[in-house]
Image (tube, rainbow over all chains, first blue to last red; front, top):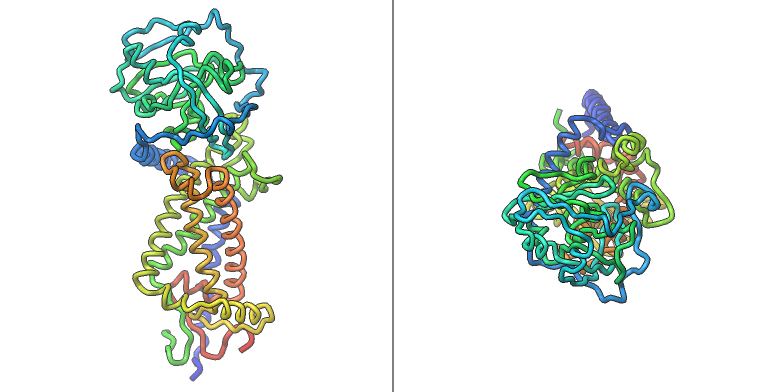
Length: 242
Length: 225
């Protein structure tokens, strides 16, 4: 038996136009980009806070980043910043002072020789950039934990903030700051950190993305207020653990 | 007017299937659009995707205002879309497994049946019956389910190569996991091209996925009978 009435088909056709429109709306989403929009940005901020929470829960203070044989460490490490490397700040090893602020007992500034006299250890770990590239390198320096305890920092506070000589700034959670592989790296590939890699030192954190690891650090502070970060304040996720 | 099942081929999709299907569709568009933008900032191969095909706002504004190549938005889309992708995929799998939809409609499946239906399809001898999947379709659906699962797992591996180091290791380490993440993206794009092309050929399947059911008088199959 064939259906005798045609109208049902017409209904189908109308429905089909409707569904075609919803598919069109879906394509418009990519074609006509809605990213730069307050509603979308508010949603991103909320999801990013949720992602901070998820990553903090996933993070373990004792789980170590994989270490590689020294032969796998890249000798010519990739330079990366928002400016070309000749513009990297040239710091005088004699005039430099590391300033300390916030919830720290002894805020006396540190000189380069004082910093380099701290106990050091090496790690061969993978640096992962938010853009997707990665590179294994050998870094040598002092665990940040050792330094923080040395200067009497309040390690029950929530954040450690960093200020850099090139206008960069960053901050990390205290759990990551106390992680055994989070170091003040004085050397890359067994050589004193060259200017473009952050002389006199960079913060090397193998449990976080590359942009969370500031170079040319000129000040460290401990606080309970989230200090944000250069890229974080431009929309990148704050925790950015790996 | 309800079509009579005795005289019609009927395709039905419960609400849960439709919700998770469109959740997957939206999530995949978000993930691919933003993924291509992230890829462009550090390409794996010797090419970049057209910016208009990527998701993440106006790169020129981002560059001038924030010194950012438009990646911040793309990453936000990616790390938002991943929740929609995982959630709707989980719903789809849960429903397909418990309701028996997977075993009923996507099985049995054999290499011989796939070959037979594939030959029939490329020689335009394969009929489409609403509500029934041929072997090539079944294989394609199993493939895309597997590909999405691999996208989620390889994505987790490159998102958390330290905290989920074991998973990253299973994918052959970070660079290999990243390559696998790219390759399954290509596979899903291929599936979507064929999937959408076939929906355009048989528009009633779209009706079923939007409104829940579509019917066609028996004997009016598409393609040769």
